Picture 1 (cartoon, one colour):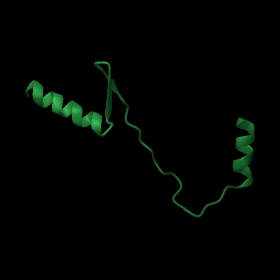
Picture 2 (picture 1 turned 45 degrees about the horizontal axis):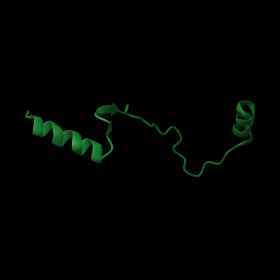
Picture 3 (picture 1 turned 135 degrees about the horizontal axis):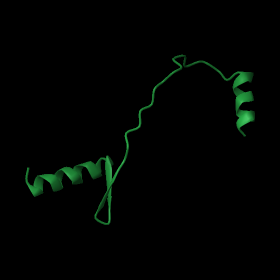
Picture 4 (picture 1 turned 135 degrees about the vertical axis):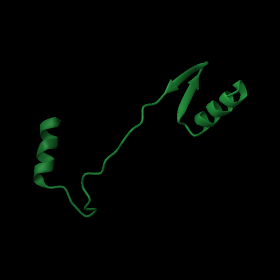
Length: 57
């Protein structure tokens, strides 16, 4: 792999925001995995859900 190919790859990755280059330093982002636990789109909050929020706040 040539230096030009590496530069092109880094440029492409920065354009799709897979990484960010600041002042000559490369900042790597860790991948985020989101898993959907609740499959029911019509589910509404219950009193128990609000109680847990009250305990937190």
